[in-house]
Image (tube, rainbow, N blue to C red):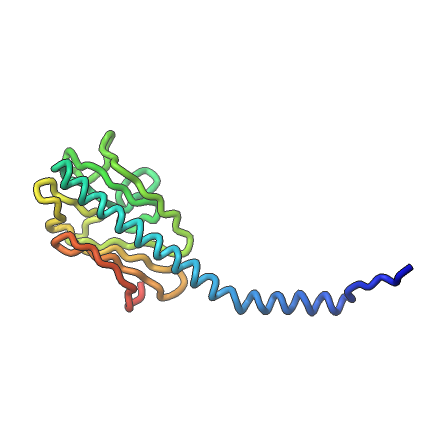
Length: 170
């Protein structure tokens, strides 16, 4: 026989230790990249939802609400499940039957969102007469769970949307 060669137990243990050390070094960088990708996705979704709400308000001349929502479609300023856009036909700032325009899934795994709108509201309303969020301006912030990474999407009183990396933690 040609003499088989195999790894010794010590060689195998050294390989496992080296792989473990490489994994420990790479893990923080990989998590930082994943949190950054999630933050960019949230920023994109919120920006799209705000644009959708504004355009629907302008087209339909109706009051349109955009808010973070839970599984039951209730608006909540810190819900990370989804963003909903709906017609507010009865003025109660709650989604009722037949009012939903669009929902955007968030599926957050590495962070959370925090919405701060004037007068402690948990929604932004675009008014049908002007297609602007008069009195409903503020920001939605994405905060990473384990580090200081945060992005802020700011809505001005004229309806202009700006986004930037927040230098202040969450």
